[in-house]
Image (cartoon, rainbow, N blue to C red):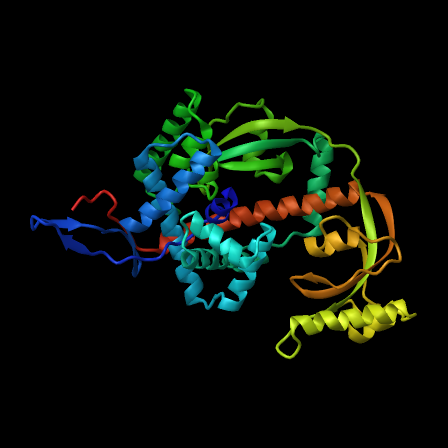
Length: 437
């Protein structure tokens, strides 16, 4: 059931708030069973919430084989991430971002389906793992809200011009390393936007202490989990394979000089102090030949007036008409509820990954000219017809697409870090973690 933990740990989820309370022991001594450990604007975080998160993260680190960081460092790390989550969720609520029960149910159904379980069996599997289904639902709701919040506030506002793409491709060609890639991990010691010289000196000392530990042979993932402020700190700071050009200019030159297994010195950016490690390197991947499929479809969407079963039956009837000489283009124009209806359902040439998995799997199973049975996807019910297939060298198109994605990913990540820092700096936060009374 490792996938259950991956679902819960992949993002920073907000636990249910449990009020502080006290109970008397048999010898009339007052025993504290919960307490407030942080005040975040008008909200609070309790010790029991932190303990719940600690249990989940500890289990995740054990499954990953990551050595446990010191307990105190891990607690501070988790608390800071909970504070940032709480601020984002509060902002989402203030700005009207919600996920209703119907949307949540569909998401959970898809998670169960992806794990080849019915929703009922998935619920039982969660409970067997000791995860209450009600809490799991709310965790997923919060995960969706956080993802949509980032998309709305940051990702959708990032634009990439053709000139930026051209400049990047020109720079890559000049450097002769357009396909050089590095598998890297990252540690960030974040600095507040209006940090005083004393605060900056203290944070710099923290970064130097982290670097010293790493140079002394400490495990990078363990140090990341205990000290890094990056969003993926608990995943060992892993950024995966990146083209050098995809990374900020600040990182590119230091990484070029390193071999696999080596780490950079401390790098300073407006967001804070960075330390990176190269896990591996690889070069030119050669031509990129992919099989493309020219396909068309008819889409019928279930609604309040058209049940799921009725939508499926409607497409079954349409397929029967096609088998008896009906024209696919005409039926698509008449019945399809997709934007391609005016073009006879024509989707053009599709690359692997261009469509949702359910659609692609059914399409790939068809021969040219063949029409599928009704296929269910998150968008509704489809009839799919493959018109033709071809092998295409997508190296140039792929290079341009990747360049655009790299620029957008870099700009979005920088914008997100800036946005989080501003949100954090505007908030009132009072720490009580070290209070014992």
